[in-house]
Length: 67
Image (cartoon, rainbow, N blue to C red):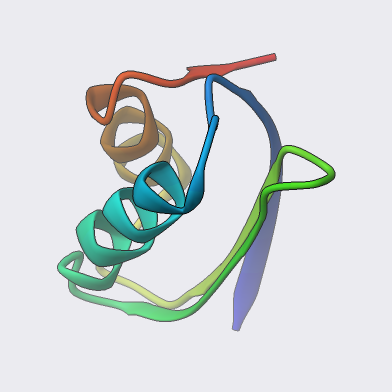
């Protein structure tokens, strides 16, 4: 399993956390999502057909920005 970790700006509350997690869970190949509001980080474990670009775009579509 591949893993990617992002520092994310704009996650202000539990609502954003759930929105990001739910969006990432819909990507085929995503196995694990860990969203840490306090640290402002998102860690994703994935296999093909998911890829880093698809995961990054998914996070950004929720209205957050990746550092």
